[in-house]
Image (cartoon, rainbow over all chains, first blue to last red; front, top):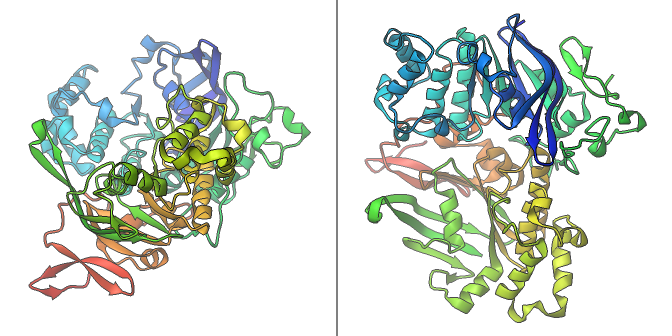
Length: 316
Length: 300
């Protein structure tokens, strides 16, 4: 078992009270598993991803336990987490352009990064070049400034840098969202390659785009209003979703081949509840076509089949 | 209704405008009432520039854009206002399209005061109500609200309503749903398709092939400022001829259909095509950019 998260709660501090962005999530990611984490904006998916590596100043750890390869991650302690960051847990942020220092050449950036972790940068140079080649970049990139690279190239550089120390867990936060379709496919397939080559043991890919996840993820977890509503193997989520929210979400995605005249899709009416003071019970209740009285009690996130967990009373 | 004839746009870039950037090259296209034309391209393909040129937010460098047969480049004052009474645009980011301290009602008042001859008269409130109803919003509910009190989908639909209240004939929709969540974006998309049925012409600018395929009648594929392929949407998606179009279609992630496995996909990092390409009709209404070598046509 690579990663085990148990009842994790992370809130945002605001003047009006706590925003309950991640509110009691429990899940596991196995060795060599790529878990996709999907959800709409404000569902807490990025917060969940980030809280496994670094809580920023607005985030407050409330409770929960995170275990990586049998060792507990001190996610609440910024200092103690340093021993794990980059070496055990690494992240590729959404905007790679802002992740690279514009005044450093890529080569110097890489060696500074490695030396900050006590790794001999000169010794790692060959491996660095080999990995750049793996992602389709020339070693000459090392002598360039971030400014000289395109968006897709920068994303690949960040991907190589983040995984230099062969982390056990990689968190990829919306890394394909700002890219063109052709570059998007190339970067997404690189993630799979990093796993296949054993450079990264397991991965959490955070994105709003279910169709990308279906291409690369082994399992997909869907978040709604701070809670996990469903987790299952990727094909099962797409072909036989159990939670009404997952179903509605998938039904609203246009795919090439669908035409307005023949197949009119429908969205989901209403909007997610405010996480400042979320309602009790199932949080999808107000928008759910199946909602009934029992939904006023919060449904547990339970396995209904091997590897398939759902938080819904109606999903037996 | 609106025609673009060999339109090019060169931006001056760099210090003191010393450099030149060719954003759009020799683009010709036509949009009629009651049809949706989707303009599909990756970043830097010049798709948004074309939208700006049509809305007169930028000026053409060469070529002509004509609305109802009249060149729009020379329009001034009153006649430009008339033009904006017929042609309007909606853009990508609904959150930054609003002045945060103006209530929604004031947005409509500004349209009335600025663009409507005779300020709409007694009929105006009813028109606003109808326009809002057309986009599925209730006037009593939204007009007194501030932008931050509404969701992204509602704001985007309000922008469409703002255009509709003017009896427009052409709408330039530039990436209107990219910022919206999956569950709300389809409502805006269906709205555009419904408006087409009422005779509105729509230029739907997007990078997303599946969205373009979902609603448009004709599709134009742009690459580096040039049209590489254009045809009826169903024809283009079932029989793509240009290698670039095929590559785009192959990289769209789809539910229920996995990317083919094989040689690692490295995307479009290659240099531009060596031979200059000329738009050639390969089938009825299906144009493809084909390289001409030694004056001899080569099938793409």
